Length: 230
Image 1 (spheres, rainbow, N blue to C red):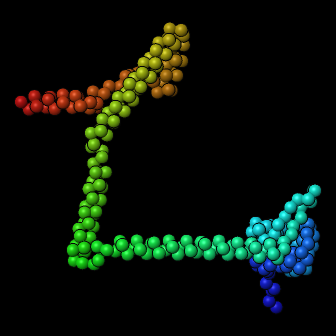
Image 2 (cartoon, rainbow, N blue to C red; image 1 turned 90 degrees about the vertical axis):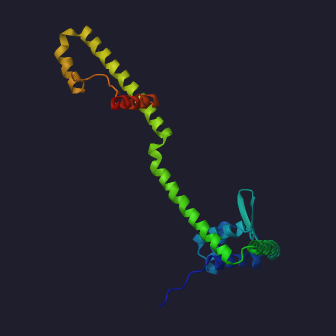
Image 3 (cartoon, helix red, strand yellow; image 1 turned 180 degrees about the vertical axis):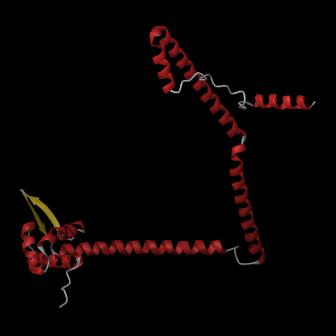
């Protein structure tokens, strides 16, 4: 035995509208929820169905006192449908006008673009140029690391890091001196604490003599190489 198909939303809307049209009366929501099942619309869905009709201006509602009443007359629905039809016809006319304009633009763009040997050759050359452009652009990305501006930014970053590291090194030496002056009896404990923190005997300031930090340094290096060769 096949299961009975439930009503679609449009079918439910039509059933509920029939209640208004046949009675031409005003109803509370709880009254509509009792009448809906008699038309095949379960009471739990009546509220949503009525709200969709209100949203489409097919059913009106108003608050009278503390109660909200719903109503709809055939003449109101007819006016609403005529208004919708007029809007759709207006939209259709606008769409047809826009379509005609686009067709005219398309025909105008086709002029001068007729298929020919010259046009085919020009398009081929354009594709070759675009391909070459992409290849050169990829090469530029690969050589970005050797860009002077990039190298200069790296040099400056190294200089800042070097200065910061040595500033903290200086702070550590100052702290060690302060601890030695104020807690001489705890020398061994302090040395053990320094070792745990990684502050060993070879702990010292960082030298950057091997790093090319400026263009002048490069010039000096190049000059030194020339003198060595001489």
